[in-house]
Length: 328
Image (tube, rainbow, N blue to C red; front, side, top):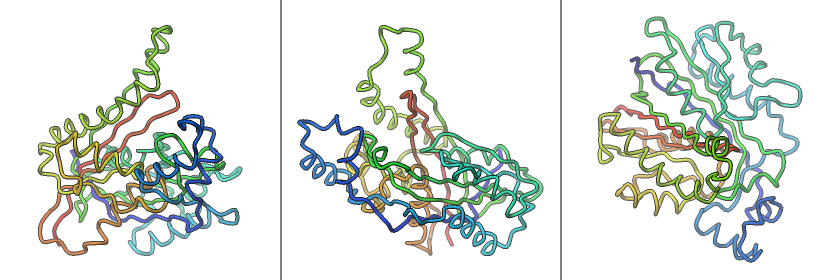
């Protein structure tokens, strides 16, 4: 199967922000707070999640203008011909700005005449899904690219607290090419778990509770990581760095590291302080920041990018992408 590579990455996190206290106080989920003690809950949440503020687009921010400038910079920096883009992937759930389709606007604005628009609706992992698909979709002969665009913008503050984390705003771009490069997409593993919907439909009196589902998410996620590395032909000890989403610091630092029997330093956790969980924009932000912190590498590195997407029905989608970072 074709090994593709990441040619270009960029992201935008707005500098306007909302405090965790503001988000939780106005949340529709605050009924889960023990004893309705919001102040104490916020202290514990901030201590364990390491999230103090979440990024938020300001009312005056022109979303399409920001995205257009990012795409212009991409073509300027890479020098590629827009006609070589074969797939324009719309990741995440924000595909419209008012009555304008953002992805169709970009398609016309940059004359991506050969690009097929491909929307992927797995908000927390759509970029990982697209990276994996690039190995199957891009032509191994002619030079081709896949442009992956993800946007997260929460309209209402009451929707930002989702029990396990708080949601922030941001944008990311990834350009994947069908040639080897500095960051090679070596393999991809996906798992879909629809037991919640199935149990509701088939056993109406014995539906699995939300508590049961959530208690299994982390354990199942750790098992999936181990299954993934086995599929990739490596062991967890061969992985140099794991890129998780910016959801809840202690879950990675204490729980996942314990389940995987690895040192927590193997997780890249540097971006938890600001922004909140920006769906799959987190992955681009974390990969790019990790790469930028060490521009010179004396040896190849194995990077595992792992994420999970829980949808409204409480069904799960797990994704891992195996990246090989070449020495330079």
